[in-house]
Amino acid sequence: MMTAKELRRKYIEFFESKDHAEIPSASLMPENDPSTLFITAGMQPLAPFLLGEKHPSGKRLVNAQKCVRTGDIDDVGDKTHHTFFEMLGHWSLGDYFKKEAIKMSYEFLTQELQLDKNKLAFTVFEGDDNALCDKEAAEVWQSMGVNEKRIAYLPKKDNWWEPTGASGPCGPCTEMFYWSDNENPAPEVFDPADKRWVEIGNDVLMQYEKIGENNYAPAKQKNIDNGTGLERLLAVMNGLEDNYRTDLFWPIIEKIEELSGKKYDDSPEIKHAMRIIADHIKAATFIIADGVLPDKTGAGYVLRRLIRRAKYYYDLIGAKDRALGFLVEYVAPIYKDVYSELLEKKNYIAEKITDEETTFFGHLMFGRKMLEKIIVEEKYISADNAFLLYSTYGFPFELILDMAKEKNIEVDTGGFNKKRVVHQELSRTAAAGMFKGGLADHSEKVTQYHTATHLLNAALRKVLGPHIFQKGSNITDERLRFDFSHPEKMTSEQIKQVEDLVNEQIQNKIDIECAEMSVEEAKAQGAIGVFTNKYGERVKVYSISASPSPSPSPSDNEIEASFSKEICGGPHVKNTSELGHFRIIKEEASSAGVRRIKAVLE
Image (cartoon, rainbow, N blue to C red):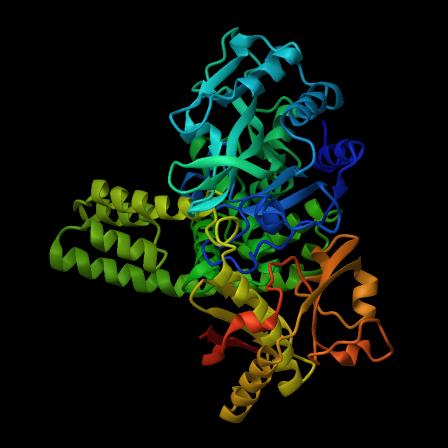
């Protein structure tokens, strides 16, 4: 059996042999992207570089990226859907393009992995009134011996990628499929609707620039973005039709079997429950490790739903002797070679999951009383009431149905399902990798606000002290939100001092300088970073001098001469004078030991 560690390394080393530089996984929490709660695809953290900024590691990149997609939470329980997954990816940033990319993908699958060529199939974009049929991609596949009957032409909804905004790089996709049925031979003609064909990879061929609705022009920089799901490919490599039987899940499943006294294969219901528990506890472990805690909104709300749904099924199968958080002990070792932070934080993560279990028990009791009152007073459970219990209090719909059955009353299941579908579609929009604040919105205003966060961070450190570090940010074209470590409320005098310092740098019309260097060199120069473990060997450092006339050469006083010096990917304005007037509109608590500032540029 091939392990996940072996497959992950094979992928990265293969593309390193093709002159790609390995870059580390970014945090699950997006930086400066207000439209998506989590990183949903490997391309998302690379948005500035797909738009033309120079990446410090070069034009060819490869990595394994942690991802969370929230739109499929209610679908988890089958053999292929996951909330947390790893996206193997490689990129060409204006370097090689379609022909080379497709040939590399085919070589990796058939030579490096030695997959059976007779079980492979591919899709290409069929074309429409606004973009040409991608015959070129089909011809490249055929030039390597692929039978044309194994190439399907699909419309934009299936084989096209573009951002949701008014502009940005975009283009056709070509997807790779493998026949998963071990009992029957692969049919000669490829039918993408046949679920036995499993998608194992996708090359996004960014050859266009979106310049309005259904309006495209040739891209100035043509990019390649490959996404390959580790979990799905690992199952295929091992001849498994069930992702949960790979070494990425099976240790967790075995422990659930032990705790529940039941076997994975006892029944479809048991299997369904164990998959949900294993998936959700893994996703919760990674999300907490990246700094999120259960909450009423945003990423914290998703985390809360995951823990509560896992807890419901954990109790349902009778695993009540140990707290749900105990399973973190069996998640962390699976990833010890790639995400060591899980082992380092496992006790903390388990504690937070157990705390949420306790809270959920109280909510269940409250929800049960609320439901009993509805049953007594209305003799019927409406879609609105069912969805309120489900979405606001985390009350499992299955439990609503059980209680209704006990009392012999009806539930508006159809109405509830319609509400849940709407809720899922909203989640999927954010999870589809089409991120307004990423590729689509590096607008002038967003760039200004991003630069202003650097000035704000530096000013806070000067006014409040060196203990200040960025804990998160959220930027739109209307305002910035900046979270930072600080134990107490800022005084009005401190807020005024910070505003004045930022505006002084704006008024001084200072050029913003960028230099590439190693992380060690950056730290030696006094540069600060948000998540230092995410950086590759070389980084970009943006400096804003404390003087309107910065010294042209480094000196012993370089650290003191910089008002701000940060490791960052961008984007930034060229001169602080482009920012206008900076004003703080609110300072408040975000969480324990973390304050939040909202500010505008006028």
